[in-house]
Amino acid sequence: MTSLQAQRAEDRTGDPTGAPRRPAELRALAHDHLVEARRYEMEAQELFAEAARLESSQALEARLSPDDAAAFLRVKRGTLNAWRRNGRGPRYVMVGTKITYLRADLESWLQSRRIGSTAERRDLGAQ
Image (cartoon, rainbow, N blue to C red; front, side):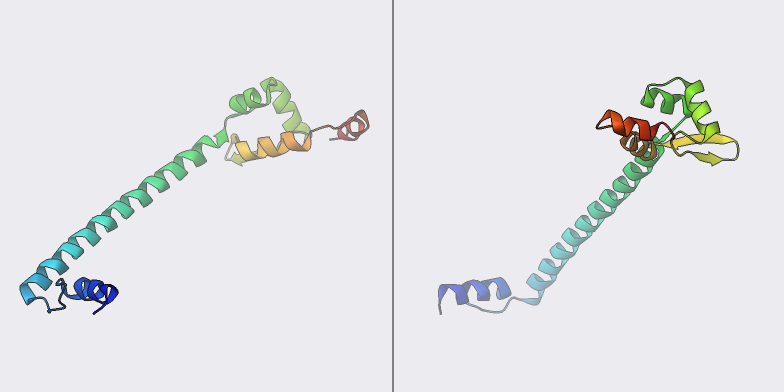
């Protein structure tokens, strides 16, 4: 028997000679594996729950009040309100009468306002 065959026999039977395990040993081994599998399953469930909590909190953090959005853009709130009334500012979300801004929309709007030359600046004046 080669060393690889001996290793496989030991893995399968628990005995380097390849002798079969006794039922009590097999039950104990199966129980140990089951306990370990349940522990891993519980850990996985906890990790999934933690990921869901983090995603939820990040989604809430991504929504900004008009005051926070104005601070993010470094403008006065009145300027942000005027942009919204005139359709010139960043996209916003309105639920009932409450206005919020998504951080991703603010960042996207800022990106759209990037200027590479003064010729490009004239084009932004209409926005």
